[in-house]
Amino acid sequence: MANITFSSPAMKKDLTIYATAGDCRTLLSLAKEHKVPIEFECENGECGSCPVQVSILGNKQPMGMHLTEKEKTVLRLAGKITKAQIEEAEVKDIPPPWRLACQFIVRDEDILVKF
Image 1: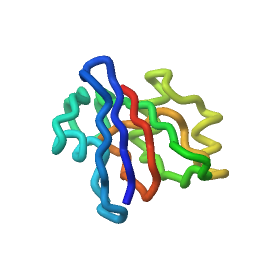
Image 2: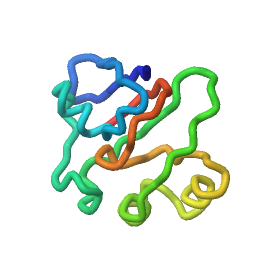
Image 3: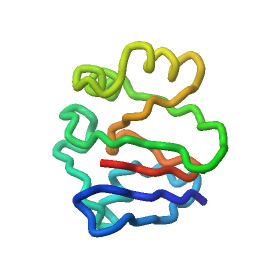
Image 4: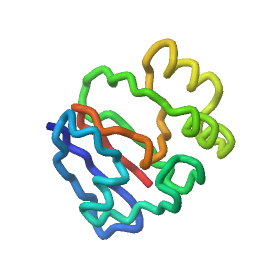
């Protein structure tokens, strides 16, 4: 079970939802289900309209998270992540701070999502 807290000036207050570990749904699909107003257009990682800042809550070591090739390219071109952060994600399993909501698969860890 993971707690996902969404925070944005577009919302009246933060919203925490519970996601089942191993569900394999994207952060965007969970946001849509709970009416969280994350902007999106294509839902497949090509347009870059759904960037979110993801922080791990608590004192746990962050779980390594795979970035798709589309996500690497789109976030790098948008200036959200650097080549060094991509290399850290690939080599050291250190997740970058920005992800695309349509590509991010929720894991069994509590996160704060800012958008």
